[in-house]
Length: 328
Image 1: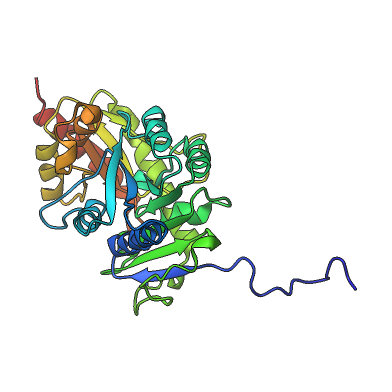
Image 2: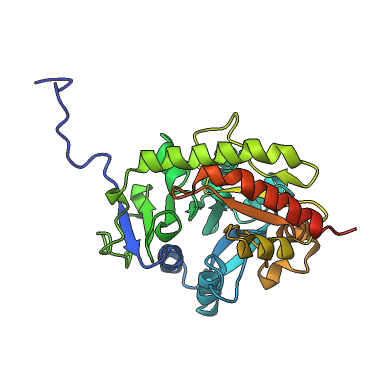
């Protein structure tokens, strides 16, 4: 009898557990529905607490990918939302998050951690440990972080979901991955196979990741020339492997909405994450930092189709637009 086999033979180890949907919000809602149902099996009067970041947007065209499922499940009396605060550079306010976690310790809860712009939070390890010690589930929103997730060798979450159409040239597509095998008996409604034309394995993930990183580095170098007009919100220097989804800036003393319009009219597809926050975050003093950021954030594309040779013109046009729309 061999103590150590010459080759691997166990076919049921290190399997991936994926479900596919039409959109990331469907994956998120399915996971939270199953978590809420599990909580009610234990105690029919129990509502699942879902802890949400105090930076969630909404648009007239798309609604809110994060908050619409929360509203639907709240109306079904399945969950109770609880917001935690973010800092002025869109990091988790760890002390506020700890308060929320400690207050719900021993009760069913899911902590939703959003990897904005494809970047994970610096406190992710401490946060994960706190959630697990309190008996909770950590769900990671990687709507913008598919490539970052696959660049990492270690993951600090129980499950995660992706927005495939935001990272690949798909019209639709969402995906849920469950890492905690104790959750695999939940009755997820997604398909175990990718929808036709929405299979991320079709593409060279490493090549796309390199393209995004190179674009980010190129635009970051150019953006340093105008730090009087904006503050970069992220860098790739001295962090764990990360593949950015955009290059985010906080514009200074300018009308961000007008700048956004000007750049798009000139053919430069900048975006804003987020230009409008959901209603529960618009008045509460705890989320003042979020409102301030939502008024000035602008995102420059770094996706795999970008021609980096156009970045010098984009940055100059952006600088001109900021100066033209300056607020005294």
